[in-house]
Image (tube, rainbow, N blue to C red; front, top):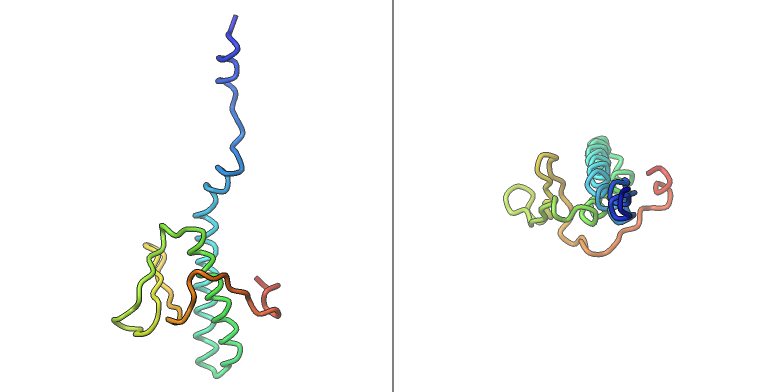
Length: 122
């Protein structure tokens, strides 16, 4: 007859909420990083055709997304001040996923709000 402890140890336990959150942090950060890269590319394209106001809105969205990625996976992202090519910008690098740049005046600790008209599109 099995003992009470052996019956409980053979059962598969459900993961806790904390374990699920920890497991999903990096994949969520990767999805957010991909959105930020897309916003950055679109921002550059809009600036090239003279749509500066729309480019500014996308810059705010990119900034918000990058800050969310930093919050979710701070150990994966390397934040430095770029002194080589984009002088006066923060360079945020993710090994294997590229880099993005934010203005030096960006508060990397404060949560950012997206513009209302585009917050629903995210």
